[in-house]
Image 1 (cartoon, rainbow, N blue to C red):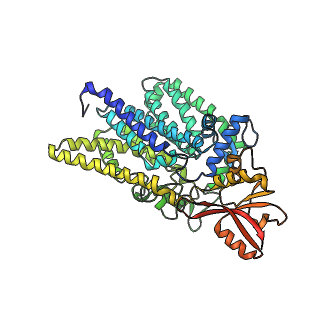
Image 2: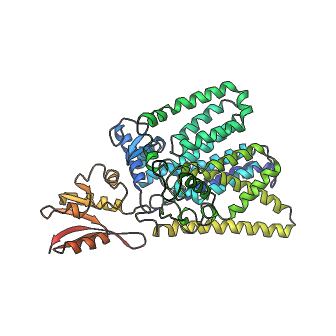
Image 3: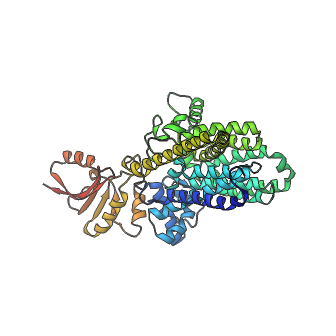
Length: 526
């Protein structure tokens, strides 16, 4: 190996990847139930459906063990929901149990990228270092951590199954049986997240072209793999053709929702190119892009990747070109070119780091390779210069990571808890309603959340039968005992219109930044 003696290699390899996995575990599990602050409706829907599958064997609408789950106006993929079931069984129905599956897929992805890089660079003397560095960058990746700590319909599952599926595809060059396992894992990726339905077939087509000689030499396994691929996909194909499997597509695609003042082709080109914007990747991230107002997608003040990675990625591409590693170069370039396709056909004019989450992988692999190449160049310097360069490099990585850690764990909650963020407050409202339900005829929560009704199901699955979503404009009845949860701005406006009423405040819910989120109380005649 390049840096250490052979007799020390094995222990250092095990120790190093273990430390990286522990770091990745901590960054994805630490305070996962409270950071980010709030709990989005998609998370509540996934958790509640996992709960009903566990307790009754049906989804929230009574369908027995469905493949696709009707929820919140579309159909959710099954992997995230069924993966959440055992954790709900172990820890109950709460934020921790719902987010845990996503976090674990994120942690498994760190190990998967390590294995993939070892196989991808198996002919390189530095394969273990490239693998370790790539795993390290994924472990501390702002992009990956952001979605490993929340449960948003299989993003990290998509990343994990694609990574490990690619690994076994490459391993199949030595053991043909792995080709079938690879197909199964790619199928799980497709059933994890909607954009995978576009990315995976195109990615597999690219792998087929790159490794056509190997595949045609094993024609029986190739045809068996294609047959299994089609068989496993048949429920999805049926759903798309005869049920409502395309409901989400119909909501977001550019063809039924054409852009204003722009033709479809130019919109698609701009959408595609924006994923390679330095601002998106290295400077501001999704939160700093033009027209982006949703704070759920990334923290302020940092790119989806660290700035240093821009240099490392360029070095990696130079290294691959010089070493003429055509297959590795082809896989990574294919991956990079295809990663924006999940957003390409959507009507959104902003970069969506959710739909393009699969791009997190090639960028970390290239960063790991670039760091390896950079260290090789540094080792050629004289000893004082070498020590100085290594020290500077370590300090840059350390500062970048600690800056991100502060941005996410200390600052993020102060601006991401409102409506365009994680919509903080539903838990406290429902809990207060449940505790006081016996005192009232109706308990009414303002519709200040996406699909607010799901929170009654999630936080009070066996209670809150008198709880409703609405506003005093529609629900207030002077002859009924009522409890309302409303925002301060709405309350002020309503009282101006209803000057014969006053509001008796019983509970105040505050955002993490100290601003009042909701007031809970009752209206009484002056």
